[in-house]
Length: 257
Image 1 (cartoon, rainbow, N blue to C red):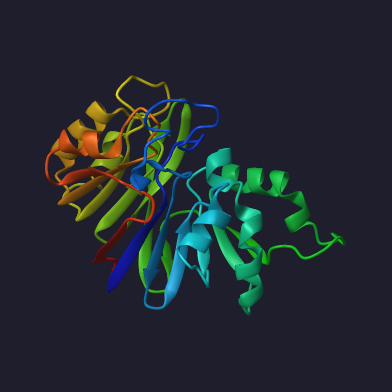
Image 2: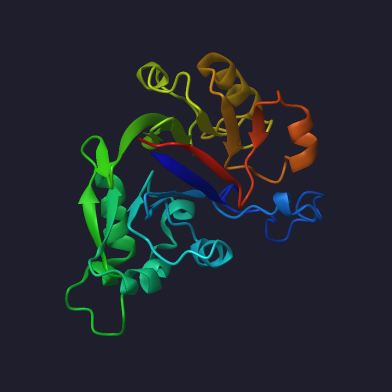
């Protein structure tokens, strides 16, 4: 079964342009240097699944003309990955059933705390998103596609990327454990965190992600969660032909099941 992956956002937690910054990337005329917070959308067999709901989700959804949403899968509970949850409201009103939100325990607890009003049965002050938390206790089968959590290390935290069919999406990591590496070899499409060239305590660098591509041998590799250190066109010229920076609005086809 064919799927289309759309990069909703390819930027880091502060986005690009970054507020108050005067650097050349933040003021670049290249639209690919405008990076909203990191998320992807998967469309297959008439269904739409998101990985994460960023603070920029409203802008992303309008840009991509999203008119339905069937499920959200969360990687972890950091602000740049969850704070757009309230903006699924208009899409949830279109659904006959509540939209399922799939999350591991810690992320589910954070969502319940930050968005307490959504999950409060006694909330009386207006329309709320019609959503329902569901646990991730292993692989997920959603609308005929198989989503496998991939454990990664994000600084001192253990979080998850996901493999789905011939593709995988690992947005935030500083290390990929060896058991996870074995589940990522030889893919068609691989998304990897590559924040910048300089080392960072919780994110992969460009050089480290290039080494991972060399070891894992995907047919196509895309780097995401990119800060304002990396100009799009200039950086791409330094990469092998099958490796590129992701950019907002990028669309790819692959086999999901």
